[in-house]
Image: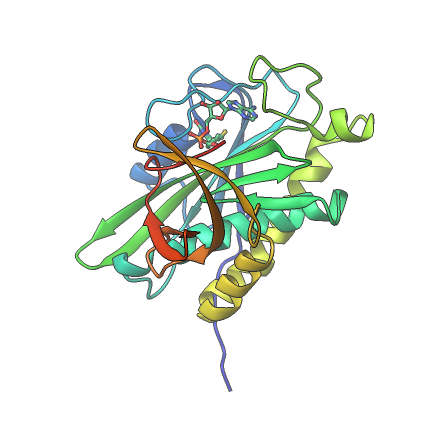
Length: 249
Ligand code: BT5
């Protein structure tokens, strides 16, 4: 028998009208020992919503899902932290794909695309101690009811379907998707997570244009390696790229 006791994501939900960034507020609550594994911080508006490095996350007030969740996964080595990325991407993918089946993809490393545009972004901040991941704060922005963006590549559920969505209902559906994938993470179904990710990877298996070191070239995505680098076939040779080393053209 394989019994795993775990507390579920969503056991604590802290709601805010406004804050700087849900990732930062969640970190404060964790430091104060108020938030525990599975806690969620969600907000209607962020004054300093962010993406990777210095990127800004755009979101009008009370239009979209903006949240962070705190997980303390067992037995994840620092060298295997890519699985947290796969876990988070697949949970958000499952959620978006239920609404828009067959046209939802994961754009490496952690964007969710529908119809070639970005519907959701994920910002993962791991706390690594020694050689293992002690905890992770996973920030998620999903465009839901917003009808105009200043970012040209952004797309919302509303822009796709013309529906107005109930954000509270959607939050609970997203939490269900996270709990489903959390079980796979806890059971260490790493090949399953990797296989599912590869199956839905944006632009995988066909030739397209990319840019690296200022050079434009044609390549074909064939997967990711065991630390999450993008694997591209370029002129018959496999090349590996880290985030920020390559852009999609
Ligand atoms: C991401 O970064 O895509 C991660 C975004 C995570 C946002 C959530 S919201 C809740 C939590 N709290 C935070 O403070 N952050 C997280 P990155 O891959 O760096 O992409 C950022 C880029 O996406 C920006 O530079 C813009 O080009 C574009 N962008 C900004 N807002 C967008 C939006 N609403 N939809 C689509 N693209 C957007």
